[in-house]
Length: 62
Image 1 (tube, rainbow, N blue to C red):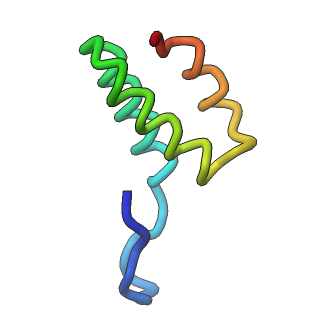
Image 2 (image 1 turned 180 degrees about the vertical axis):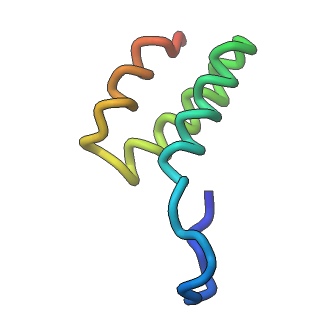
């Protein structure tokens, strides 16, 4: 997910972590392990100490 490029205090800059979690869960549900792994790897690169992503890792096969 790209970073917000426009520095505007009125545009939301939150929700990126939740978006990663939703994408990972979606691809796990659809058994698209490659995509789930891709978004998991991106998420832990941005949020290495996040507890939710550590839990989601257990759902990913492959």
